[in-house]
Length: 104
Image 1 (cartoon, rainbow, N blue to C red):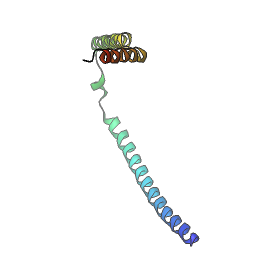
Image 2 (cartoon, rainbow, N blue to C red):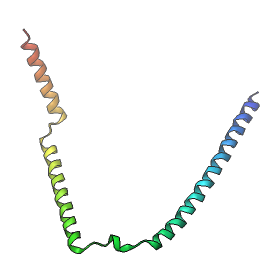
Image 3 (cartoon, rainbow, N blue to C red):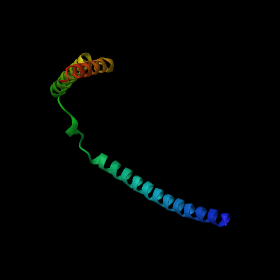
Image 4 (cartoon, rainbow, N blue to C red):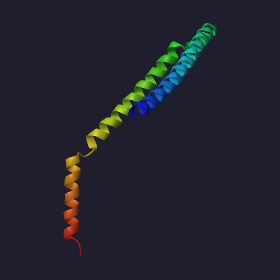
């Protein structure tokens, strides 16, 4: 009985393994096709589309640096003005004690 159950599982997983191997082969074929197509497309590409002037590159880089500085300043502000967990806990306790004592 146990042998037949084990045999059924073995057959089931052998079938699944065969299906996975077939899928893997299909994927590898598609990958090879895509690579060959990419090589052909790359040769036909006009690289002049990607060339920008030095002035445009400098402007783009300056804008990027400015944005990075702004992000850095925002992060610095958030970290310096955010309370720690201990401070929040202390404030919660203070609030609760005030609420208990001021209850009418």
